[in-house]
Image (cartoon, rainbow, N blue to C red; front, top):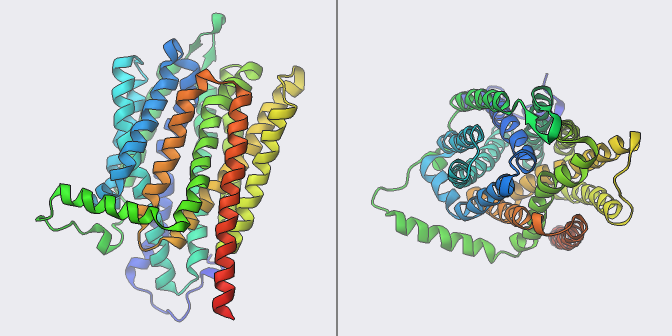
Length: 433
């Protein structure tokens, strides 16, 4: 049943395409859930099961370094292919990465990681473009508040997406077994199940509708690839000259740092010493539950820039509390507390992650609606760069040093974000007076 906010205004017989908006959002949500329940769980395990010469951690570092490089060109590829085709193409990299884990060696993991960096840059720019253009279209067709629809659609997507941590890690918990001597059994069956899930997600992507006629049109065949790249680089440079994106970039980079902290440090330094390798799945499932719930709640509460400011500030405060706890008072405990503490940290961290995912996407969709591909390319460029840094340095620095880096980055990024929101509030007040 539609809520009051969704009730069409002055539209008795909306055009047929509007009937597909919510259907497409649901398809996108389910497809990403099926794909990322496999990839997310596999990523959580990389630093604990592929430990020989740090193969798992280094592979993830290579992946996100590749992701960073290809994010520069991702918006061009999405514009050329159209967001639906780009989404389908992006799934192939995740499938190949999971397949490489069936026989993890330098000769399988490194090429798969390099290709996944390309595929990930494509799928995430396409996702942000597709979801935001769908929200804009839905708001226009039904004469609804644009910021509210963007927030709701992002909340639904990120809430569903965050649940991949719950589902994927419960599957991990069910199939993996800790053996004597520190080894783990059941990995082959686990990755086969993951491949099946990814295949279903890719098939589901094919049922998406094409969105935004302008976006789906191919550029003139007379325009060369090199000239397109030059135009793209100029557009990205122009966007970097926008004070708004410059003040948002630190928060984007922090969102990548805090995600990588969970994958590389939380699982290895906090969960594994207390709960073992098998406990990684359970801890990440708790993280995923709170991430999903917070994503849905934050999306429902988003109606514009003022709500985004409040929600981001609350999420940042929660992560500041966790970081101070880790920095000043946390230690591996025994008994019940040894189980409760890692799970509590995961739950609180999931809340912060849910806030950042939903609110950054909504913020970019509101501020840069005339250049969605470029804005979401910037999002993934800075996120993936910061994630790559964490994976490459995590093995050479202590947990305490990593926490100090995160705390400093969060304070700096939050200050820049609040300054931006304050400037917008002043500009709005000046125009209204």
